[in-house]
Length: 354
Image 1: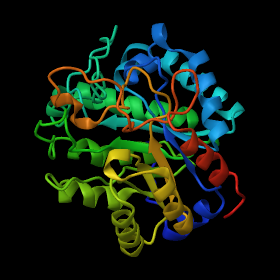
Image 2: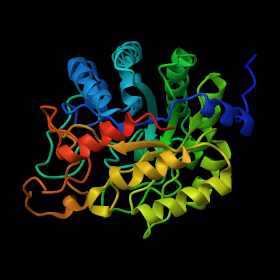
Image 3: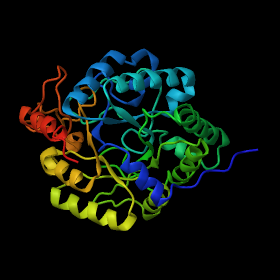
């Protein structure tokens, strides 16, 4: 008999869990030697020494959590090896005092993921090789193709079941920006992933995790996220997470509005876009004052090339390294892009304030 699906955490359980946590602050992490999730997790390119080195730098800045993307194709081709590599990643992170927020699915950037050798970065282009999971073709087949449905369910259930009581996992982030963009200038994915979004919460709860579940709210001025997707995320998330790439004043309005709307603990799982007025010095005080978790985008400049802005996709010729980086904090040798910014992080995150 199939066990009953657990229900969403009560407001009390969510708040009690949150109160037991340290202030969660960290970054979205892809090692500098990986262009995307596949290159991170596939056996031939899994670079644990780089992960170890760079997570050490993250800990030195004062970070205690990283958000890291998984990929369904790695599970499809090598489930046992994938689990072993996740275990190795968590062990290294734990040695540095860092917990993980794994992400299962993603509707952003390349809509046609392919396993195997990944392309070299396109010079000067932000996230030129990032890929969606499971991708457009799988989402189009999903509602009527039992094979796709079963494969994705086994992926989510298999990973969460293995680590369902593992304290090195802070939160499970089930779906990044459902309805998001294949690449800048393209039409958003719309509600193509809505059936999967609904199901992934059920699959995750069936694995009985001790960690909370979430899927981050997102929107843009030109293409607001689907109301149905936003409603599903809010209805099912134990901890409400969201993305924000804008000014401090706009962030304060968003945080205060979400606090009133949901009354649940809040986690900003993406921010930091220096050219859009999203900076550590302006935003971290807002997050700490409200006890909102804060996960910035990027750590070490590498093959994702997210020091370049989103709109670098429209450049006909690659431009030199920008004077002000868009995302990321450190160069490949561990030195900071902005020493004053790194000093601020170390001071602010180790000041002992609540």
